[in-house]
Length: 166
Image (cartoon, rainbow, N blue to C red; front, side, top):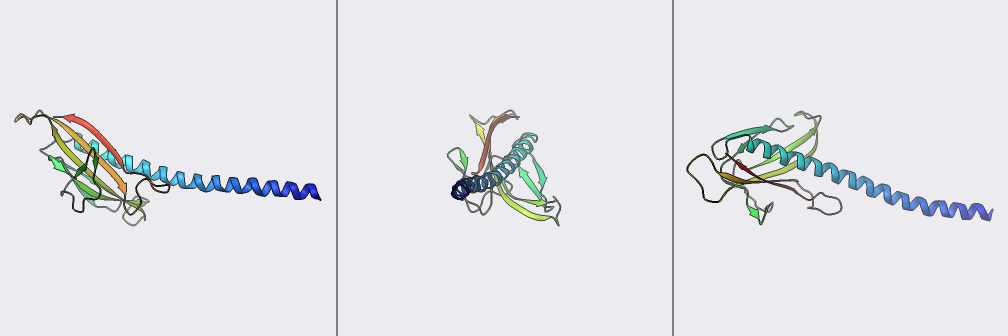
């Protein structure tokens, strides 16, 4: 009888520890999913900018809600805070940001999963040349709207930086 009581006590104590690990794993899994989506969106914008002649064209990207977002490649864009995008800027430059909607399935009538704030900035590196051959520093960042920035439950914004030339 006493052996059963001791064994049950040990079982309950170890089970409590496992429950904590399971809860932590669920939170980490969700944060990683958001982080992966942010990285995918920032990468997609980077590809769109570099596939267009920078400072002379635009491209577009359509989200799951069916909204087509214009991706401007003109110099400037979202404000920078050092080397990262400043998400506290209330009114980013038109054509250099989007609120990307993710639905499941990825259709206009799908269930809303999240909305991501994606912003980008393009700078000329060195002196601007009148020829179409310049080097540019492209900074793109994405974060889930309405969430904390990098706490236990939320992924920090993803920032990608790349140099490209025409």
